[in-house]
Structure formats: structure tokens, C-alpha cells
Length: 397
Figure 1 (cartoon, rainbow, N blue to C red):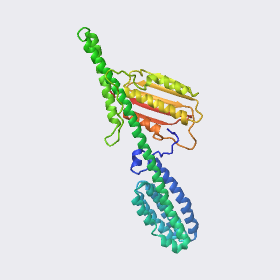
Figure 2: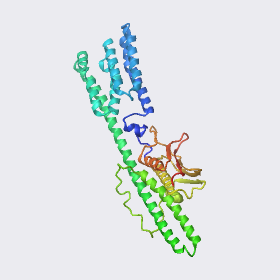
Figure 3: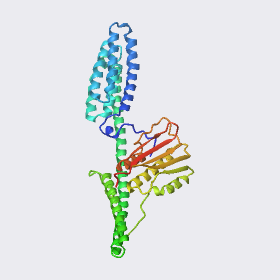
Figure 4: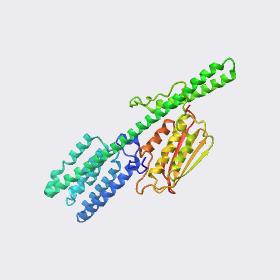
């Protein structure tokens, strides 16, 4: 669960459609605009100083390219066409500006198109960008032609590399989600099997004392009702954990035990101190605080909260540089449970952290989502790293 993963901050759904997040698109525009103004704008000013009316027209065309770059993440094909035409116009006005330099904005857009659109589209764009090659040869000879073709191919190749990198990250994220769902399904299967086993035992006990001790029989029936409601909630969670198109072989391959078997349920907030002790054994100072009635939670919420704390503590041990203290707070507030884990470590410099980066953070989000909750994680302004989850209690039973 690497908090310094290099995954972009774009939303997963947008990444799947080949789009960039608003923040990434804005950063791309500023970077591309700065490069075009610095390189092409400076060249036009230097070369066009003695060309009278051509200079302001060329500058206007450069500014048009910069403005068009604003939409290159949304419509790269259209922006590529605009930048190619305006670039050729700049070169026609000021031939001293190399064709490669005049088409700089088009090359940047070609890179974006190659990274965000299907290969067949980017190959056509690459072929279109190579059409002015005879002009480059006529203006600069073999050297000019070589430089022009190299820069165009390099722009396209860079986009393909970026596309492959994003596809790899998406594949890893999908795999992490599927694995986490399978793990959740196995745990829920065991919890439901345990609950049903207890219900069978209670039903048998109620039948034995139904005539002689009706009060005890009623108590057993009420326990059966409570257990049935809990089991229904767990089954709803299990159904949400998988979709029909996902392979879930093995999700229910472990028998939950016979009717007479009563096993202790798996991890829960009741064992939070045990979890903290295992972390303390590494030399880390762990503070655990409980606010409100955190006992008697629905098993799905209880398990999700425990696993989120477990993953957050693991994250602290593995990736919190210099951390020697971590605080865990679990609080029941009305219809939800809030879990907060804060350490005093520091994230690696120069690398951002966003929710969804790393397999452990993906697992936290998936567990919270399946019970209708949410998770946010990131570095704190005053130092350290915080994981905060909100898990609703109502509607899970």
C-alpha cells in the first residue's frame, strides 16, 4: 500500500475512457503553453523583428495555438488540426523559423492524442503530421527532414508510452479491487455461516424448552430474529461484492461449518487492542481511543472498520518515514462510525499521495464502498499522514 505511488490523480472512470482529470488537464495546458511561448514565441520575436506586418500576424497565430491548447485534453484531434494549420501559417510568414519549431504546438497535441485516444486514431494523426516532410526537406535538406521526422515520431512514441503506463496502472487497480472483493466475500461467507449455525442451535434449544420454559424459548426466538436480520445484511454485502461478469471462484469454497459448530467470528473492533499490540511490538507507539458505543455494530461495518485500521497501520509501518507514533480513533456518531488513523511520519518528498494509489488504499476504499461509506487519505498540513473513514450503520442490516 505504497503512499508514494505514481498513479495520476485522475478519477478511475475518467481514466478508463482515456480522459484526463480537470487538474491534470489544467497542468498540461500551462506546461504546453509555457513551452510554446518560450520556444516558438521567442523565435518569432527574434526572426520577425525586421518583417514589418508579418510579426504581429505571426504572434497572433502563436497566441491562437496557445489558446487552442486549452482544449487539447478534451478534443485533441480538432486542436491538432488547428495547431498544424496555424503552425504552417507561421512558417509561411517567417521561413527562418524552422518547420519543426513552427509545429511545436501540434507535436505537443499529437503526444496528448497518442496517450488518450485509440491507436488507430493516433496512427492516422501521425501520418498526417508527416505530410509536411517534403517542406522540411526543401527548407533544411536531409538534416531538416531528419529533425522534423524525429520530433514527430518522438512525440507520438512518448504518448504511446504514457498510454501503456496508464493502462498498466488501471489493470493493477482493477486486479486489486477484484482481489479485495474476493477477500471480503470469503470473510462475509464465514460470518454468515457462523450466524446461521448459532441460529440453528438456538432454534433447537427453543424447541426443547418451548412447553416447560416459554420465557427461555421466547428469548431464543428473539435471538434468532436478531441473527437473521444480521445475516440478511451480510448477504446483501456479499451480493454487492461481486458483479455477474467477475470471476469469483473460491469466494464460497470454504465451508462455514455444520449446524452444531460455533466458531468465534473473525477480526472485529473488539480485537483492536490486540492489533495495536502487534504494532507496538515493532517499537511504534500506538494510541487507541474509542468514543461512543462501538460494540454491537453490524458485522459488515465492524469488519470493514477493523480492516481499514489494519491497512492504515500497515501503511504506517511500511511507508511512513521517521514515524514513531500513530493514533487510532474509532467513534460512533449517530448513524455512522468514524475511523481515523494518524501518524507523525513524513511522505517521500516530491511525490504526491491521492486516494486510490496503492493496493492497500484501493482495498480500504472498496471495503468502505460496499457498506455505503467512504475513505479519504493524504498528508496533513502539519506533518504526518491521515486515513479517515466514515461507515454508515443504518441500512446495513
